[in-house]
Image (cartoon, rainbow, N blue to C red):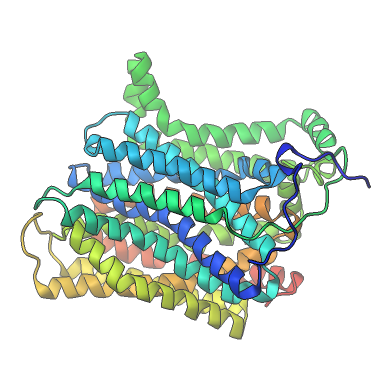
Amino acid sequence: MQPSSPSPSSSRPERATSPLSSPRTVMAWVALLYFSEGLPLGLFYDLFPVNLRQAGVGPAEIGLLSLLGLAWTVKFLWAPLIDAWRGHRWWIAGANAGMALVLATLALHPQALGQGATWPWALLAAFTMLSATNDIATDGYTIELLSKGQYGVANGLRIGFYRVGMLAAGGLLVVAGSLGEPGHPNWTAAYGLGAVLMLINGAAILMAPAQPLRVARVEGASAREWEAVRQQPLWLLALGLVLAGLLWPVLGPVAKAVGWEAVQAVSGTWWFKGAVPVGLMFAGAGLMVRAAHGPQAHAMADGPVFGAWVGLLARPGMLPVLLFILLFKLGDAAMGFMVKPFWVDAGFTPAQIGLVSVNVGLGLSIAGGLAGGWYVDRVGIFKGLWVLGLAQAMSNLAYALAAWYVPHTESGMQVSIHYQAAVYGASGLESFTSGLGSGAFMAFLMGIVDKERATTEYAILSSIFAFSRAVAGWAGGLGVEQMGYAVFFFLTFWLSFPAYVLLPSVRRMLDKAGLR
């Protein structure tokens, strides 16, 4: 085996050691990295929906916003590029700079999201693509930096500070409410401060420890891989279907721009925007599974693009494990995108929403993440998955009770202290239990990846989870409009349990990885 020629970004290899890379210091960098990864998701799930709802956009349309989150689902498509070019810290810094530019543009045009224009939605799509790139580089960099014995503590920090990053979006809601007039939040200040935070994150991460050096790939693996693809084009068809599903929701605006009235009329229906892209992506995934067991799959095993897929899908018992990843947080994801619209419809102002998220949710999120990491280290990943998964589902019941008890209140009217207490209690429980469930889930994903392909394999596994989050968010908007908040939140509690049928496959996979 001979080393392959270096990629452009690896011609100056990073140092294998660093004075900043002691175990304790590495954990501090893990905290910063996952604050940086959580902040964009918090903006997407908290700031943008509140802005849209206050601008008069309906729940179904806000649910469709989550389809832009399909970028997190297909991030495996460009994960091999990041894996091959290395320099993960520079990818993270560049993605943060790009997201800062998006937020700065929205700060200059704060009312554009509620005016029906196409270009703000294109900006939000770019934001999710950059956030997904940030996720790829952050996850791969972290897995390479950590040993398996550090997963419990590291995941506690990851979850806690990821949640801190998400809740920082609540701080931006406080800024919007505090600096604006009653009923007219200052979105310019909120988006502007978000842009500044992104720039600070990107600059700080450039000072993180250097990536460990990696064994060079087999020479000629890329050429053999593409030769195999030419002989079995099913891989390309599968990728084409996945990409078509991703791009389908934007066909309506494109048709409008070029004057295709008939296509535009069809593309405005809910099934076109939601059910069709979901079906295309499932079809693509099914073809990929079939191709991974085809006659040319062995020739791709060392390839930089499809090798990680072949390696994952060729493992015995991997398909039920992938289904488990898809389903484990389905109930949490289905409820999550509708929580902030519920707060708005219950009469809470952006400042109230943000203050509770920051003051109550911050401490509880960190506590939940650390408690989940400690519990996983103590009892093992498998028991942690099902025990902490049950705790995670309880927050859905709490929100269902709050939605049943709290009436719809017009914006600007005073919310009763009893109603405030009900919603605040549900929020606090959700903050704590979400950290608990994520602790075992992240440790599980990290434990079953091949460290030599950590960036791409983790991107694939987390993409599967992101797919359920995006689709569940879209369905959540339709569910709330049809059932109301209380009934829909109660239904999402039961969505947490189908994954439990697949726990025996999870146990076998953990046994093979030497983890329990």
